[in-house]
Amino acid sequence: MSMADRNERRRFPVLMRILHWLMAAMVLSMLFIGVAMVTSMPDYHRLVSIHRPLGILILILVVIRFINRKLSRLPPFPPTMSSQERRIAHASEILLDTLMFVLPLIGWGMLSAGSYPIVMVGSLHLPPILPANQMLYAFLRKTHTILAYLLFATFLAHFSAVLFHTLVVRDHLLDRMSLWDLSSRQSKS
Ligand code: HEM
Ligand code: HEM
Image 1: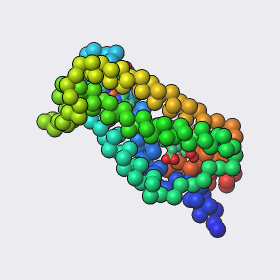
Image 2: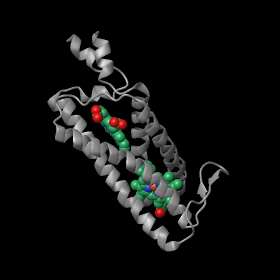
Image 3: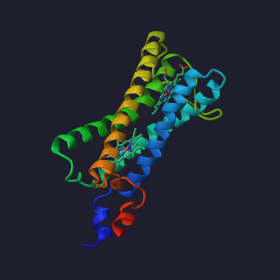
Image 4: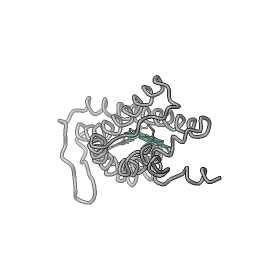
């Protein structure tokens, strides 16, 4: 087996890698847009008008990602990870996926409960998915904030774990998800 083949087997399939980085960029933008939105009055309307469609796009992509994941062969974890670490990594990845699915639904649901129009672009609106109810709106509005912060905290743990493996353990964990081959440069030196 050639070196290139062996590298390919340790990596996620290319569509999963593309979706990972596309969604990582979108989710992180959404977190910052969300926080900027509620803290800066002058830009509020411009920011919410990006926040709504971008969030719904994440909802669509996470479903595609989930189906793609079920149909793909995933690379096994590297031998540098203990069985406990694998369990934690797996659980936090499931949590990230779940939050990327639930958060946009709560955003959509809370605007429905608050009887707000759910504007995507121009005159394209989404239908409400919940009955008008101010108590429900207040509850979902709070839940949206709490889960967004939980998503950010889980992302920080995920990012730290990847950095630790890549820079300290040096097991090339990042290569598994990178779009191009990072290790070929190192193996030449
Ligand atoms: C710059 C930041 C990020 C880096 C460096 C990074 C890196 C990685 C790496 C190396 C893996 C493969 C780990 C493994 O072998 O299991 C991975 C998997 C994963 N990442 Fe990230 N990631 C980042 C941001 C994010 C964000 C923002 C999210 C979502 C909110 C995310 C969600 C996931 C999920 C769900 C997996 C599991 C893939 C699967 O098995 O389906 N990542 N990430
Ligand atoms: C992955 C997807 C999403 C993330 C990460 C996210 C994140 C956030 C964050 C961090 C805030 C600020 C919360 C605060 O500090 O109180 C926020 C507020 C908000 N989000 Fe999202 N959100 C997402 C999806 C959506 C979707 C799909 C919608 C609607 C269709 C939506 C509608 C809103 C609204 C209306 C607000 C608050 C506006 C206000 O009350 O002034 N979000 N979001």
